[in-house]
Length: 169
Image (cartoon, rainbow, N blue to C red):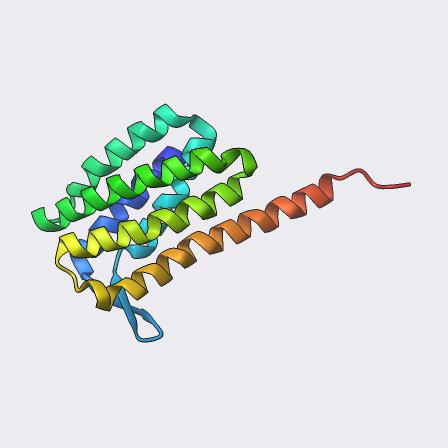
């Protein structure tokens, strides 16, 4: 699936799930908005779009995602989602751009470390969900949504490098 499609699909999924199911248990006695994992995926997908298609495409995706994020939900949820998404994605983009020359994985982890708390705080505060009750769960799920794919990517890349390295005689 092309990165742009992954990005926009994750945005729509995050908002659709949250509008339908609200807060759900996420383990360890924590709760989070139902679309939190998909929202976490958008942060990595944005980095992927940036890496493959460049900044103009990322900016177009951020705008499209902000518009589409308002579609599946009621007005309060739509506004909260659009504002949180737009602010967090722009922060993510700024951090990612500054660090991408040091490696995509490092840039993705750092940019997500900045954007995840901002996205979560803004979304919960603006949507009317209980901020302090849901914030730990939001952070937990989004961290997993970032760390797991990054770890899989890093492992696959290391394996490919090992397999493609010429044999020593």
